[in-house]
Length: 164
Image (cartoon, rainbow, N blue to C red):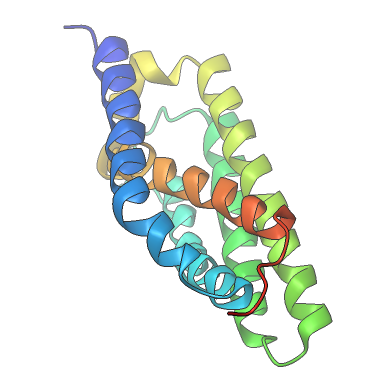
């Protein structure tokens, strides 16, 4: 089977598996929390996005990984991770906390969408072997990141629930 087809199947199944898992476990858990706790949980997950810098680490990725994809993805992930950490650090200053929550979710979502665009433009699915050791990131980690960004936006826009 061609690399491009394998990559696309695995990416689609990554989303399917995470949507099933998130629907059964993640969303009910986040729904049981107040808005701040839910956003803190999501920010905690995204605070590890500094790991995306691995896309520009020689020897971990293939030498022909398209720079148009790798550089933007690496620094977009890094920026998102730093913003998520700043959200976690500013929990006691609510206006700052909410500003960083919005910022890391906007930057992170744009990062993922633009990374998908760059990957498609560069033909990365057909040359997924260039991802090297980072192959699992778009297949396993990115679907969860996108799903949790969507959940974070949902928690930001949904009406506040009355206290029981």
